[in-house]
Length: 445
Ligand code: GDP
Image (cartoon, helix red, strand yellow):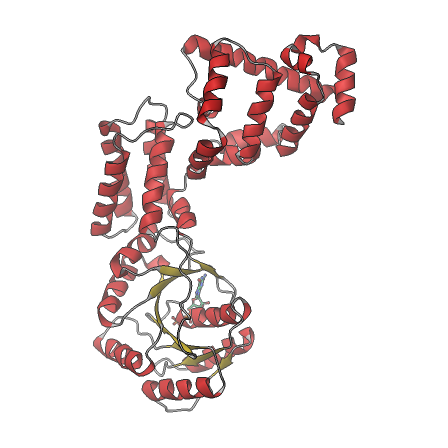
């Protein structure tokens, strides 16, 4: 999903990658692209403006971590702002803090996935929260809407209010509340009627149901595939009923970024859930981090930057860089590097995190370089004596055999480690010639 946006950002950051520092010109150029990309992704204009301003301010003159490239750093800043706009780190669950039966009112246009989401929430409440839920459809417009909820209720094992033909929405709501009380239900889910478009009659009905049932949650269900339309719908509902949250459906589909990004801004309310399929367990707590990652589509550069910041302590990197600057790089150093790679999630994770590293990852896998290899290499170096690690040349055939036996590997594998060490030592010397190493990131980036 969000292909255009990710491609465009990818291009910008590729260009930024490899530059020495983050200057204002770089940032402004990148932000021009970000702006166009967001507009193309159907993000509402005020949202784009606020986003770009915030990111520009943070990016200009920001300190670039030693172990990542400026481009990666910008991606991180863009990502953090996306996460922020999508609702931040806090997971917003359902508010069930009221006298039971807690009423949850579902609103939205026809076809947005309202009825399906109602049943999904009923199931979630029963299974994950251990709550006794009850559901009622107040949709008397669409033929068989009430019947649909009844069938879904049977599938998820959640009671539905018995259908009384001809009863009007407000009366159904009152009856539902009575019935939920009588049956000691913890939660009552009200599935309201939708329309093809927002109109006055719909809004009047929503307001009336709201005042009769005094819901704790009023959840707006919107189809994430409808982009700018979803934003308009959100705008219309926001002024009329006191929304408490948003559910974005069809996040499993090919959604453009616009809806997700604008929704929070337009409604001022948290996106609480994401619908991820037609099945009745296809609902997830909305995760701003994940969605931002998908919008960026930059592999997982962001967690790379975060992991780089914690896994590779700056001092360690510096000490290593100093040794390397002197052209020293022994097997202990190699071992430390392997450890750091493991800390960062192994070879595969590392490769997957770098934009444009998909090919490298495939190549690694083809040549049998997987995480097991990292563990084997560590065991091999661990089976050497300290002296051998300092002076790999000592390792003659006999010693290699001993190391292989000690690490439960083959002499061939020992040779591979030695070969890798040789190559890396050679690379270090070259880096030294080129004027130093800017952290571990430079090795991979
Ligand atoms: P309502 O008119 O708003 O009540 O919409 P429905 O709940 O009847 O849903 C309309 C269609 O969308 C149904 O075929 C659902 O199975 C489908 N649907 C609902 N939510 C999702 C979702 O998150 N992902 C996908 N792929 N389909 C969904």
